[in-house]
Image 1 (cartoon, rainbow, N blue to C red):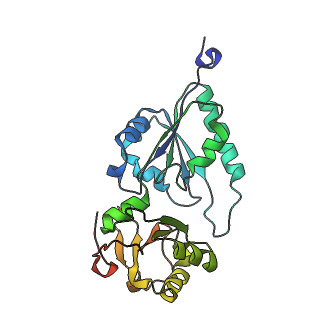
Image 2 (image 1 turned 30 degrees about the vertical axis):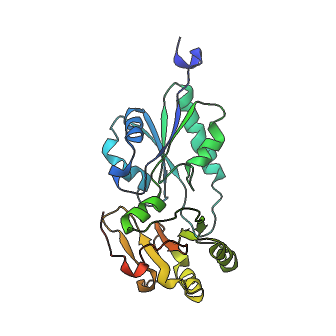
Image 3 (image 1 turned 45 degrees about the vertical axis):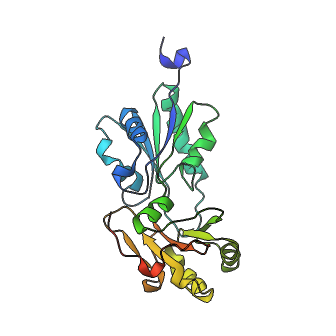
Length: 251
């Protein structure tokens, strides 16, 4: 009797692979990726998968790979059909008794692409989530910028939010991180300057990678930023290091 006939299915793993540096992956995540016969990962329609590149050192020649190719577009792309198709392929392997490790940049449940796989498959298969180091925590560590303490309210703000919504969140928070800065950099910088927060804002780009940049936002002259960039601001009562004291660091 085969595995499928016996009703034995594989386990679906959502693996957070961290912000980019391979040595920031958890030991548990690395072990599961190495052991699983099938790996799936998000990939752009041109270029290499960033998630795959992080764990390239533990991918074997006999690994079965499932790229989940989602076109990179400025406008929101209707990715539901892409995830539907990818999950059909993943489910086939699970039904045949093979474990599948789905790679996710950062953490699977923090703006993670794995959530779309989880939504479709977790109710039918055994599923385990392995948390990953988020870019927010990595940025704080690499830049030497404490995030929050005591009763500080920390808010995470997506960069595409309109100015009015972003301003309201900033006003209501003691500490904040603006993610997904990208093409919104100039607009966000102008808003923070208008709110007299430019001297408290630290710009972080590609944290943990060799090309990492950490500097005062006021010193950034670019009009746009890479997708993997963020801005950290502290407004609370603690006398943390001022943005003007932050030095450019390398991982």
